Length: 124
Image 1 (cartoon, rainbow, N blue to C red):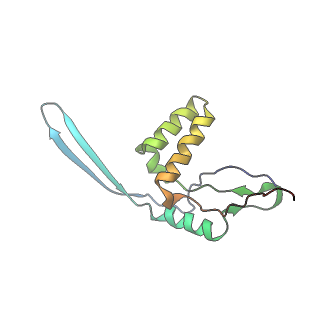
Image 2: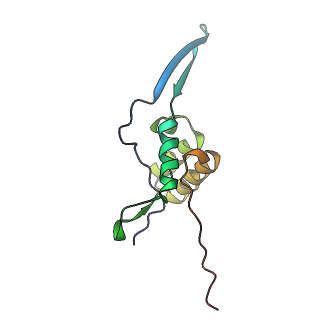
């Protein structure tokens, strides 16, 4: 059995999650504007809940993978933990990348797949 620590799935049949975009002019002289994007995260939350109900595993035998969670693509653009994780991955620092992804799932548990933890108590 091969186990992967985490995977990020693009949701099957995913529609555009961006539901609304609003632009505000804050100061014309300084040319400051604010762009506010609203997007739907319902599909990712449903996928994480469904994976939790199914045990959080995909595949059989040697191709089995343990899922860590589902992250909507739009969140990579604004979430500080994911932005730092992306920087670390681009620099080749997979330890820091993993640390930031774990922090993301602690802050956003609705996207995480919950697993039952089993600890080996040792031989008696």
